[in-house]
Amino acid sequence: MTDDQPMPGVPDVGSADDDCGCGSACGCGGHEADAGASRRGSDAAVPERPSRGDGDRPQQVAADGGGVANTSPDGELQDVEFTEPAADVSQDVYETPADQRVQRPGEEDLALDTPSYEIRSQMNDIETPDDKTWFMELDEAVIDDDRCIQCGTCVASCPSDSIGIGDDGLPELVKMCTGCSLCWDFCPRGGLRYERQWKITGGDDNVKGAGDPITEFSARVEEDWRQDSQDGGVVTAVLVELLEAGEIDGALIATESDDEPWKAESFLATTPEECIANAGSWYNQTMALGNLDLEQWAHKLDVPVEEASLALVGTPCEIEGIRALQDFEWDYASHESGVRAIDYTIALMCTKNFNYKQLMGEQLVEQRDIDLDDVAKMDVLDGKMMAMGEDGEMLVDEDVENFHDAALKGCDECADFTGYCADLTVGSVGSSDEYSSVIVRTEQGLDAWDLVEAELDYHDLEDRSAVGKLQGWDKKKAFEALERPFDPDAPRFIDYTDHAENYETEKNPHEAGH
Image 1 (cartoon, rainbow, N blue to C red):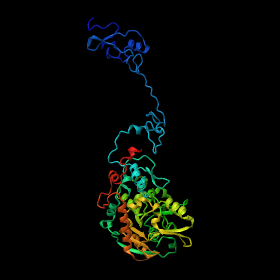
Image 2 (tube, one colour):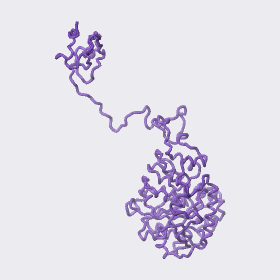
Image 3 (cartoon, helix red, strand yellow):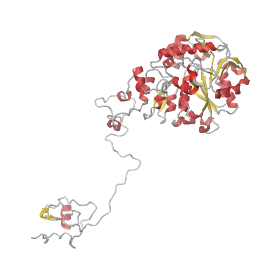
Image 4 (tube, rainbow, N blue to C red):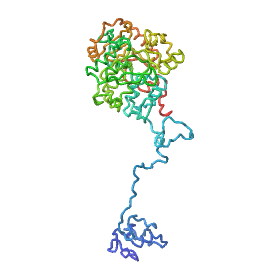
């Protein structure tokens, strides 16, 4: 048989009888006998065919037909049937459900603080980029190390709203951390070199003595409501005048908790009456910057939250935090409007603050048998912790050092007694009883003073040396407590690895414990 003679029973390649036109090497089902045998599962021998261009070597057609699934035995193209995808159900791509906790091998009873999913376990060998710092680092170096000062800056800085406030008043992770590093960068006990912020905000002179204020006064309010305020009532008077002049829409201040006596909570006062009702000082932090989500206060504002103008009354560390946040045009998620809304800052002179439960519960109630309902006023003055009753009776009058165990340990590292970054600083040091010491630091602060001075009885600050001495004492204590160099000329942000070396904390806690 020659190459140009067809094999018996097999159409000639390219002949008119070839149904598909692709020759004898085709397995497309156009050859009825082959397709039929394949689909019937026949044991009949499959005829050999010469391959194209090589008539001497026959080619075996696969017994399973090797054909296309959507053709008929006659080679006709048929409709393709598709399976309709399920609605509202995620495709099952993992061996375990997405919400099932996956333990480390051999530790089935391990209790984890955060959930771990299969996709995470598959990524365990991926190295973290060097420039990422996670909330776990902040947790390790500051919060777990009992150095958190409860300013709330980390909450305000998070662009994914992943940080909240726990029942213990401390920051906690409420959603997955993205490793953006901002919570670390802006923490005054973590990545924020707070003394550098003094120079950025107030200039080179703000690292010496009591700074370089524009002017200083001893002042007091002459209104009847002053008797319920702290010292001269100047902070409240300033807020009232700013509100009445339309300069601000509200002031973020502290109010007493409805549930726990003498526990301070953040509050947005939007009327002079609310400011006066909340006059006075409290001796625990409110996580003030963690309450800058203005949507929670929208019902009290007469303007859209993105148009609001606010004053912030806080401790020096809180003022350092808000000033640093405002220096950068990043989006702080739900706190963005609040961060941008702060137009006036008033710092309260502060050497230290306290843990509420330890100060009120342990020191006063348990150790000194004080009924908190009997306390009408508290003050820290001339190195004394004082608590007074409704009739003026002195319930507590002791050296403040006796309450050191209740103080926030992170306060020991603070050298900012007078609030270098604020527009106004107000306290009692340097003035006689019933007067407040007022330091005007910025043009914005001077504008606020100009509004209120007509309502005040005031004169030059009585004792500048008292302010300077206490500022010097505070710095000395801070230099003893700081484990890192104090350097106003160094970069504003401290790398976590540098901090870990100074404080001997774990460098990659997110790898070891999470």
